[in-house]
Length: 492
Ligand code: BG6
Image (cartoon, rainbow, N blue to C red; front, top):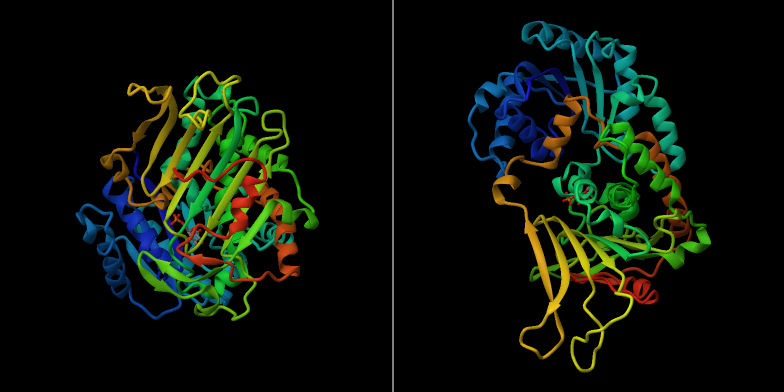
């Protein structure tokens, strides 16, 4: 890799995301040589800190990261880190930031490339971009790029307004909207598995696939994010972004090339083809849940309504299960079942592709049950990363005609350890000017158009929450959503 020339202004540098993910990722990019001599990180914060104060904080965060194999080079890295105190609402103080950029750019020869990373709550996005523009910080002869964290709005209208406002300062190709699931290797692998093997694509349609299931469960609760989560809930927190991204990667047509635009065009088409729901259809396609108290990993945990900064009569869903249809030639009639929840029995993200039965069953598995085991393709995204194919073979013991076997590939430990986090991949891509694994405006708008009626229907009609125990697999209705169609959630 070529070392990148860049000055990165990190807004929210003293926050949790910066210390857990961003600084360790940037440090690892330095260890790997992608950042070398010609880079600086300008940490931006409210507090009164010196460069040296911030370096010690950064040192602590980086040293605490367990995915880093060594801390070699940490002192040298920290010599590229600086701190600027800024009142983000006060346009006058941006002059200080600009001066700092200019002097550091001269000192480190960063090519006047400026990357602005907003690891900040969303209410600050536009204040910052407006002030950056008005005070001339974005007038630079090198590239200027913006990385922003979700949420990008709370519905279609607010997302549109946000896009329009940011567009005054950054062009669409300069905006990198983070969806950290797109930085996960196994999510990126969906495309590779589909399009580099000749044996899946011919079957990848409604002739051979009966349904596709995506599960992203977490055992953690909302932790200290009650305030944010109350406004967001599982639909905005996980479904509108991460899970619809996975749906579009599974559902897209083969792109004509691996160019960012070609891939995104195909993903956008999937999101456009999602069957739109009216508010009144929502109950037939979506199930909501909120966790009650229970046992998770043997520990008693409180119900959602008793979490910090959560209303005691909160109507916010912490679980959703849904049945989606992509109404195009390839997928007509194939349900995509998607669920996510907090305080479930385990942390895992996986995809199960269930194939249709053979046209005529010649074998039986045991006396009572003459059905064959289903062919499944299981893609596990986390915690382990693997691909497994469930097949039927002859049962040598002879009690049954066939038995089910699993062909499996698990990503090797040394490959898992190549990066410290999905964020490292994404920061690298942004520095490289590659927006493929970021959310394009049109993807965003289509995703909101799809989920708006769901949020509206639910916000207008309070649910009888809580309705699932912590440590369980979610509410009973989530099982019914599939059994009605003759399917079940695969626990594989
Ligand atoms: C974030 C959500 O986007 O994703 C969190 O805001 C959630 O609520 C997290 O816990 C899950 O990410 P991961 O990488 O741990 O699966």
